[in-house]
Amino acid sequence: MQKSSSTQALGSANDVRGDWAGDNQDWWDWYVSLAENERSAAPLVDLPPLPDIAWPDDDELAAELAEPFELSTETIESFRINGFVKLPGVISPGAALRLRAELKRLLEAEHGVTLDGGANDRFVSLEMAWLDNPVLRLFVLSPRIAKITADLLGVPRMRLYHDNVLSKEPGCGRTPWHYDDHHFPLATHDVVTAWIAAQPIPVAMGPLSFAGPLGVHKLVESVPFNKVDTSYDQHVGQLFRDNAVAVDETPFALGEVSFHHNLNFHTAGPNRTTSSRIVLANTYFADGAHIVDDPTLVSGDWRKFLPGCEPGGLAASDLNPVCWPPEQSA
Image (tube, rainbow, N blue to C red):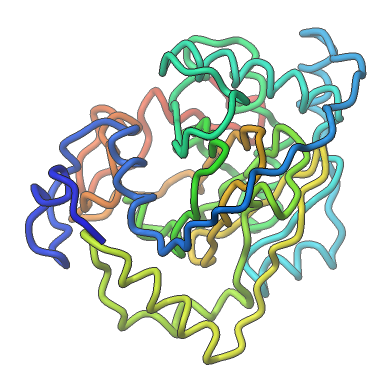
């Protein structure tokens, strides 16, 4: 892989000490470059139009996102064994489509691009959108979603780490194999990310794919992270193949939400469709957690997500409200 000028500036391949110098979009541009990709000459696939259904208004959306979503004992046990679970119907189809329209509008305004507009190979992002957008605030601070994370982990109180609005554009390649323990500078494993599909995601669009069971992360503990090429992604993928690790790469239905533990290894395929793959990824952690003593550049712009907090200190800024239980929410 040819190094970009920004990659060259990162220094030694395995040295991840220090803070990330750029913004969140710079981080994603770098991070997706670490994925091994086989470029395809095949044309992108057109998908069926999204369903023409009514969207909930603000009051209906708020009520939906506050209503508890009950989990079975089997679902919780599956999550604790495998480190992920996919749950159909966490949000209604109309809520998902309203979310997509809002995320699309925000991303287009932020990046000056036209989504669903043909191949451009980008992976575009936006974070902390809930601070200024009332629709996103309902989704990000949702008691319904935060309670699911609390129930899966078996902890009483969950705080928000951050939201991430993500669009894998037509023609964009894979996301590298990784686990979020690298990304979040939190001294706890009580961390769950809710990955909310804002449209159906068939295999051709690159759904999030999960390796299981949870303990497979131990297979790659000795693999050195490489910040300048695709060797880490290749090595992890080969170890998983050699050990016949099961990978769930099934599609996402409209309204389906996945939840993954910060030790779960996951990846996502290329988007080989003509539509943008838009998602909202919210990360929550158990109240009372501290920041690790030595955050790395893989944690990205963590000081933006935990303003005023310092390494070793409590992870609890004004931008990390308690989302469950709801009476504690900001």
